[in-house]
Image 1: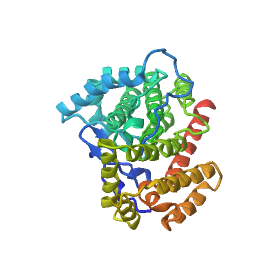
Image 2: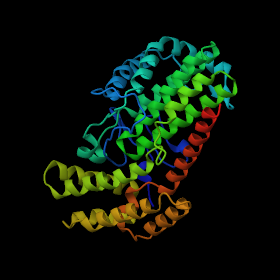
Image 3: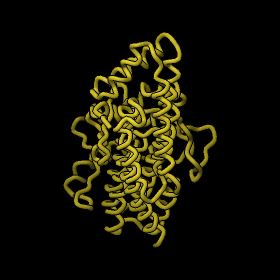
Length: 364
């Protein structure tokens, strides 16, 4: 499939090519634009229930101050102080001033992460589809980095209990990111989880987290749904419903919505430069419906999701994508879908790390 429309970077803050999925996502000053849209759902059980509260509201209060402080203080360094599977003393010294200045923000992020419900988008994804902005993704990524750095500083200072609390909070933040049921959010969740997992492994290897701290980590890890830990399958299902649905709904109407949908598809055609993109636009320019193309794209999603949980799913999805490249699922499918086989591979890798870490912190 031609996916050139996705390769534009993420404001220099977050790129997902590190996941090996071959995906980067366009950003605007106000925030990221997802490649697809989906429903925003609250997290499943396992969290501390605080009725009437939304973790997203609390996160924003903290992240707004945190990001402003980071912009105002260019000398601040915020990164995971890890190198070669261990905490690096030189990097730790660089992040310590940042951690000390943002200690209150880190503590408040941990508290916000304990709230069960988290909804950053409301109904925006359903209403705006791929035009919806997701400005929380980069700040949430930075928030997780702050908690990782804070944990490493705490561990060096002999506060393993506080280090465990920071890392448990970071895991809960990663889990909260999945609630939109949109692929970009799940991929950011995976990226964050990997960083946190590396920090936990380093501190466990160093003997910095005791049994009680490991118990706290185990509790945070239980919030990941065993059936779909990073909600990647749920994201594809949501995108099938809301991304394709948005195009269908807007093109069926008149006025600004229809114009926006046409402009969006024209943008894909221009960036993708594929034969399929040309066919879609020529169909629209002739005043004809692209409903048959939408139905075929939904059929692709359905077939992919049907084999998603099979042991050889990656190979089968790769075969499915090969069929799509030959136009079996219509011209629209060739320009809007990311590589499901590569995303699945990354998801499975993260799931394996999650299982290994769960085993480690519960077998003490």
